Image (tube, rainbow, N blue to C red; front, side, top):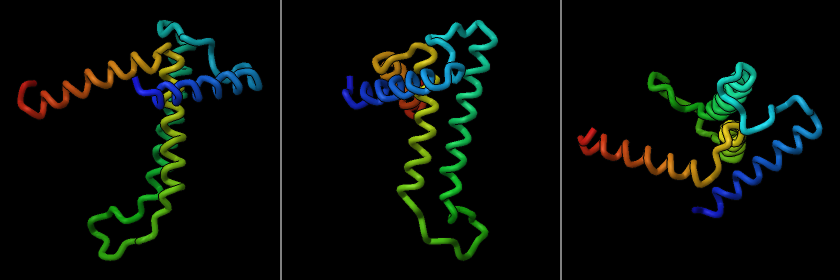
Length: 124
């Protein structure tokens, strides 16, 4: 398992614990019981925050419209990357709340990767 992926999970957990300490109702106790309404609401709200950050990242892409003859050539890579990290942090928080660790996530990632490659090769 990648030490970097494990480190990302560790950093997210540390931050979530710090936020929970400062703002006790910010996250439910994890792992959450997904059968509970409050847990599903917390996961949904966290997912929407991640999507919002993705939209903030997309705001930095200003030269994508096919009908525009001239687009903006400036692109702030650092700002874009920062918004992407924000989005990933919310998605990592969802995994943490579900009790998923780096190993389980990597296994799921590899399984899905195989599935999409099989699909590409016509085996799906």
